[in-house]
Length: 346
Ligand code: SF4
Image (cartoon, rainbow, N blue to C red; front, side, top):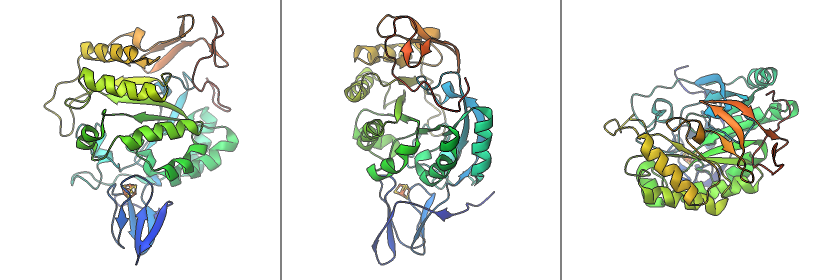
């Protein structure tokens, strides 16, 4: 598919004389007829808000640890979809060939409309969840709701890997249909976040709180981006902000790798990941993870009460889990997470 297929979008408000405001993300674009929003995948078509995101460029099965979710259905599989478009413009984005559609001239449209029934039925037959990832699933509430309508009766969970840049009405719309969300917190303050992404971090932190209040399991990722989140002060500030919401939110530290417009910066060194992980624990976070570079100790989950290894992980896999019905098998302490979903085989 070389051009988008536009379909009706939710969360549009008429503001005046044919202009529409899109209430999906805090950019709150006001669009005259014919105009496309900042994300390039929502538009005002003659007074009707439309989206190009009922589509996917990527569809494949993956380990849930790779999303990453560490406290959700360990060892299970996720049928993952990714579509073009993003509300951010990060210079380091490893998925820029998808996310920066409409913002950089050399990113073509690559998505085709999603067959909802085929996706859900396939996930149900495989005992998998459905994940929206790679660019920004928050731009696809319509697809999320359509998938959820068919997935809920057969017990297939819906997961997002998101930038969390959504308005409260958007969160309220999708949260009842999501099992878990992993949200990036890329910078400690509005100024540095805006320099990186083009948007403030405040709405992202608000989204974490709002999803949690709605009962959605939330984990957080922070990529260690040069000049933004690679200093001890920035990492401590981010860790404090997460801990202030809930110290039991799992915090994933991601290695920066040179890409897109940040190819001259070196990748994050293991010593810097170790220092950041230490800062996370010093600031009261209970679960700090690094997928690679620091070995199994930083992939495994330990019980906060008795210290036993609860979940032993390989790279992007779970080897053993001693969480039974949400409790430590050794001391019976409660373990925060989402450990059981109807219809998901482990
Ligand atoms: S989702 Fe897109 S069109 Fe809507 S407000 Fe955000 S950037 Fe603008």
